Image (cartoon, rainbow, N blue to C red; front, side, top):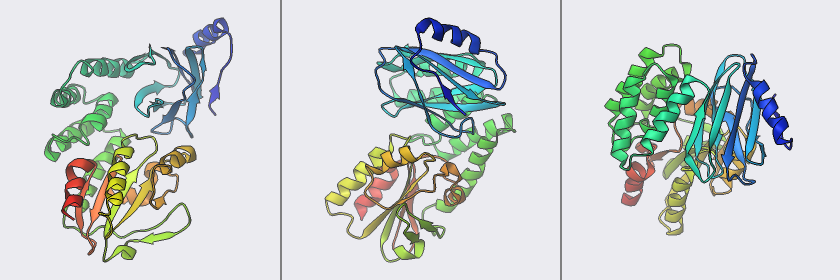
Length: 335
């Protein structure tokens, strides 16, 4: 179980930090953020390193976080503005994080080769100003470091939902990494999902569903025959959900959704994050708190959020994409 240390003298904290490193069966993340306030920094694991969402506790500007870790795991720190950063950990690792709370984009994370590599890449792309330059830098990084799990993270952030790269390009990068990392099970799921997403191509029938929302009501795909349906997949830890919800709400307020229903599916596995997201969500929400293990989402091959699917009154897919403004919004305008 995660143990958090807070409100201890700085000298004692420094001693404990030094004693933390190299202890097998433990993962230690320590650091300092200048100018940090009482804002909450969340930490969670994307692949089983933790069984719940936790918080980083600060003593002045320093923090220390320790949890059990038998092998290796990937952690995600969610900043107060809902942006996030990834940290790689191995059993016995002592990872350090340093930076300025007013400049979170340039936070440095070190302690093993993955974090050093990821930090170098992040600091480099922060010097680039054009989106296409960042895209090309990400592609080059993946090709040069295909065997590293960091390349997969860069792929997810900058290529998987790319607005400029073709699916052929992103698929080729995915297969390059899959060949170099044959034991990466999560990467294998992305390859499988890429093939599964072919069923979401325009003109195909949306796979049937029967899902229960947070109020206990059952929603079946047959319930929406005769009306357009917008299915939005989201998660409370992903800030870009708000852009989708804002645009849909704007259309609703303009009276342009009179012949369309909206149904949302949350991929949160933490009740607090789910509730926070539902505060900006006016529509029925499907949530089983199983995260990416939601059976229907696995069937559709969706591996990123937010993801939207627009279905016509006959149950045929009009558009399906993680890029709402590029692929979904124009179809809604045509309605």
